[in-house]
Length: 253
Image 1 (tube, rainbow, N blue to C red):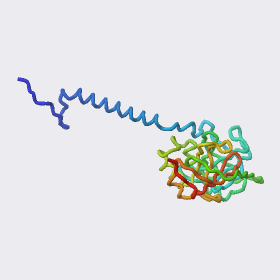
Image 2: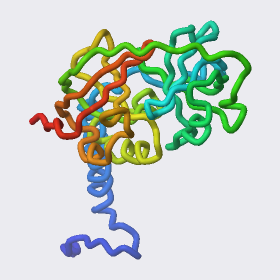
Image 3: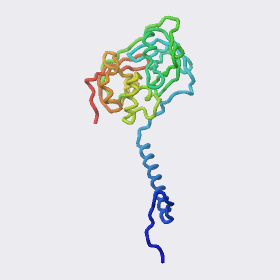
Image 4: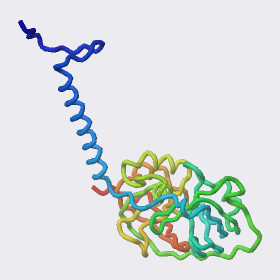
């Protein structure tokens, strides 16, 4: 007489033979379903673009004039094969940190900067080496660098941190990146506004508070979100600086 009792799984006992094929099939289907969900989520994300650390360039060392917007920049006066004179580089430290303490004493002076380039399109940042190896004063007279006012604009787009946007992280934009971007901004990494339409040929603008102040903390709530905002724009070499008015921010739905 055959045992008609249905097979029953007990965790500390071997799996009944009649359940093995069923369990293997369920596990295989579950793994395939999870792989499909992951692929679907990945394909639904915006293309993060070609931004990256340009380790293939090797360590880059150039000379230029240090400016504060208040975020540190170097206006390159003596470049190399990769970085031409007239290039403006945003500066950052390693990780989610600024180089303010090193850059502030050199404001308006000639300095040598050295580090690794991050690049996305026409957006360039230099992650400095540590201490004097990354930023140091050099002999010579710093020539005055021109600033071209471009008037007041209303732009649509999103605020990101310039380092991850330039290629330190993928994606460097959107809500998926909001928390990471805010940590970078709190650490003093230069913020960048990504405009939906180019401004004077560029879609990336270093964004500050009004009158050249640090980006107000009120902006952190809308980082990674699509917004419209007004402010004054100026050109510093090949970089645009957007002095954004916090009172003008509006979410785009």
